[in-house]
Image (cartoon, rainbow, N blue to C red):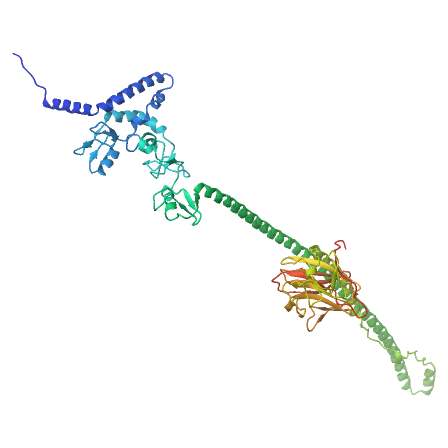
Length: 593
């Protein structure tokens, strides 16, 4: 008797499910088996020499890549048509579709297929995925363009597609090299903010530049809104703007250098100011100390002189008193003797005693004797005279130092014939001027002085300090100084600071300042031979010096200058006797004097 035992149904069901799964994965399995065999065979051959890492690197990367994200599989699953995807990728893909189809072969499914884990691929990914990830492109750096498809860690983009408006890393760029439709896309070097490079109106690449409206346009814009406008490629405009930018950069660099130089000049000015201040303090302390010492000496001399005179008078008085007291004592003794004798009643004794009475002591005629108090008249004056002499010596040193200091700001100026009064004659070198006595016919020039007998220099000054010297020897009349640019050159005006003149005037040995009313007269110690003019524009200072005598003549302080200043010379008119023919001469400064 034979017994037939049937297998449990559950085992039969398992076999059937296994067959269906194997049939479903047959296409993928066959492909992967071939690759596995080649890889493992290659790995075994290389293992003896290079180790397991060499086998890993020989596996084709595309066999481990999801067709949707193009990245290494993560939780790989298979569809009924045999294609493999990341579980998250295919799930998201079907969530966005009305009909369920395969992203690779486009096979339609009536219902949403159940996704099953592909164990074989998972194991292969676990085995070879590590080496694949090691060979991935480097992560994006802060200054580089990132891949816009990468999820998680973003990789560096190698190209940007102007059709897709997307930047791709090497892995995600692969379809553009493989798919026929994507091969036609325009790839460029990686760019960020691709949306900004597209025309908002026509959705085309901005690759032209409108020179009329100075905006970037696309090809369609040149056929519509910018049809009549001249346009050029962006590259040409870029090159032109780059050239301008280079020029602007050079200009900015120059401006920066100029300002750095200004800063250095200011620092140098501060440094010189500190040096000048220290020198001024040292000079002042030296002079004042010398004066204080001289004053103390004058005080001591005065005290000593007065005390000696007083001592002599006191001694004379004491001697006289001593003589008088001696005579008083002698006379007192005689008075006592006489008084005693006058009381004697004995005639004999009286006469005998009277005979022996001593002669009266000699006395001096005190009616002509007197003690005269000492006279101090002139004592203080003589001390002050000595102090004045010392002061004058120190003042001379100061004047020499001051003149030497201002002469350091010498400027070379020449007379401008276009400004000269028609009667004046200028030397060829522009350094001398005198009145020729005859009016010349000259072209009408707006700069010419037609009512004032003067001439200005070619050079003007709007800041800083300047100094020049003018020889005035053998002249009976002249005036010179500085004037502002806007003086009235066609009319007669008073030569005052209010009208723009800061000048020194000389006429018949009288010197006055600014020709003002009332005039400020300047005393002279000697005949003027040469006059120095110093101007500190920023400080508002105008000073005049007698160069030969080393004497400061006058200084105007607190002046307000708001426009260029010109040195101005007026040689004065010819006198009726033919005097005043000597010229005014702009002389070079002798720095060694």
